[in-house]
Length: 332
Ligand code: UT7
Image (cartoon, rainbow, N blue to C red; front, side, top):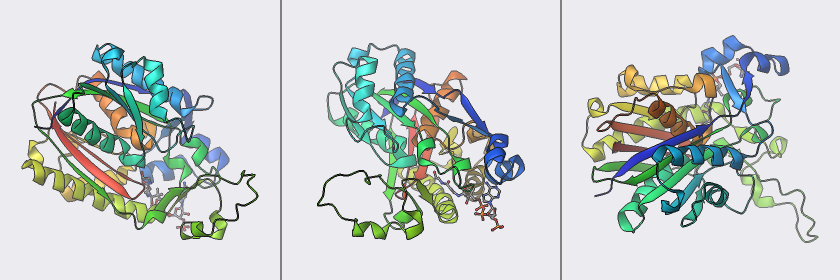
């Protein structure tokens, strides 16, 4: 039987705060608009540290919390859509820093659904191989991706990292993963290859599928309304599908941890699904949307508050660029 137990969690949130009032000093916006439309008051920016630094801090905290020796980690999975390097994979930097000398390592890139996809991958490794302990870290430094002249997108995102150590469990888990490659243009960030010095390289005509002439930049491009609509539907579908697979009712779940994109997205989906609000964890007021890091950061906060107890059934649901979505139900 496929099952996981989370035996340690950790998080790292950078010190620099960008609150809504700060945004009103650089953009035509204000706290009232941002809070009422998104539920966000502040987010944190990694002003002077790379993404892998945040990932390593969160990972080390998770390993310390788990109590295992780093040498007992068999695999390091890193979920990120904002790596510092094309290669090496961020997971290799984490593997080295935590001292996971016996671990393999690779990255998973599926934006805000990254932690869900990584946890699902981990559960399959735990089932089908002799791996015992897997370290998952999800870390994002989105500030360099955001266009701080664009008031619609930049106000949503923050930087941070969350990590979890997972081990095999004889209690069941279920997952539902989905990808919808069209409309991929709703949310993307193009790799900047303008610095090539290869004389043979011409302008990449295939890229016109993604970008219009005004958007030929390496900044994140987002159709907020399209993503919003997708997000509400994706969250509902993923929760319904995973509960169907688990043969559980909505009431059987003790705790829901959704991706923290926008409080209105969560509220709409929660209302449509008929979930009890007090079982749904929301922390985006303080962090904004940290993409793949949202769910493991929430896990780390909940564990630190002793709100995830042995035997609880937890449902996590993510959605984001790709467009991708997914949900996991597991018994702690
Ligand atoms: O992980 C997934 C990542 N992406 C998302 O989750 C994005 C999902 N989408 C959203 O969260 C929302 O669509 C936004 C927060 C991006 C936008 O909220 P909205 O309620 O859909 O606003 P809107 O785009 O319909 O804009 C309404 C008005 C517009 O002005 P006009 O045309 O009515 O005069 C915008 O220009 O609000 C204006 N506006 C702002 N005003 C003040 C847009 N952004 C701002 C702002 N401050 N920051």
